[in-house]
Length: 107
Image (cartoon, rainbow, N blue to C red; front, side):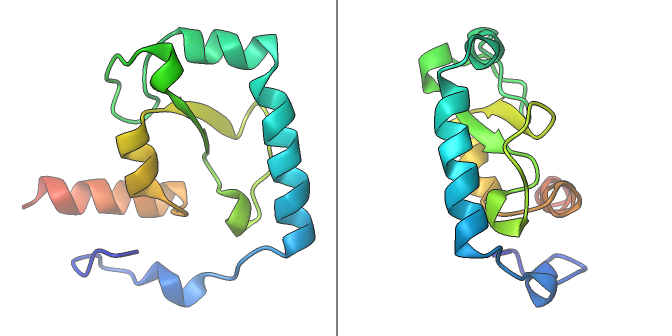
């Protein structure tokens, strides 16, 4: 996490997933992007995190628990996300993301 104001340095606990897992889950994500379920999710045109309305084609697929942190490409772990939130969230887990949002709202 790039934020020095965080009460927890989560990078100390970060262990990347192995390459086999990452490759497998990225392939599943590629296939899921073609699914009607994903098209319906993206078609709502709302970022899961900031709730801003965004043209559907500008929404990205975000893994709530990132692939590099061991997350899987499942319907319960992927959400439509604007590029700004996705770029800021990077590999953060939900608790880390909440801490980050809290720290910037306190500024």
